[in-house]
Length: 134
Image 1 (cartoon, rainbow, N blue to C red):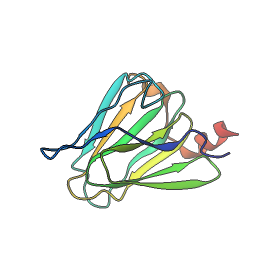
Image 2 (image 1 turned 90 degrees about the horizontal axis):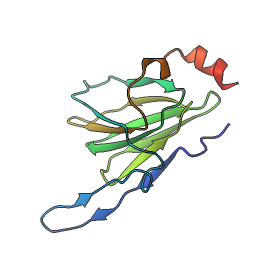
Image 3 (image 1 turned 135 degrees about the horizontal axis):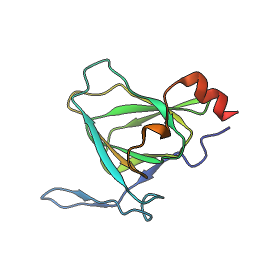
């Protein structure tokens, strides 16, 4: 299994000497309707976030400030993405295990999600995830 449809997506960047602007339009720049937005910040050095997969939810992850890594795992292979610019992000489809680490000081991880929070959509046990992937 490959990481089909999990990819870096460039966003529009309007450059201006007064400061740049980037915007995101659902179903245009990202392939889903945005139902939830959240962000991670003040992550202590050496900590990781994520450590789960979603049964149905799709996400788009942006380094709004600073940098961090996203490690995707399809049950067979892992792939690391370094996010460090606010004008592109990582699209992650459902049923892909994800972990975030290597947070720089002051980093902000912005996440756009395809659905509202639903605890039942999470797979938090890696062994169960691997069984469901087969």
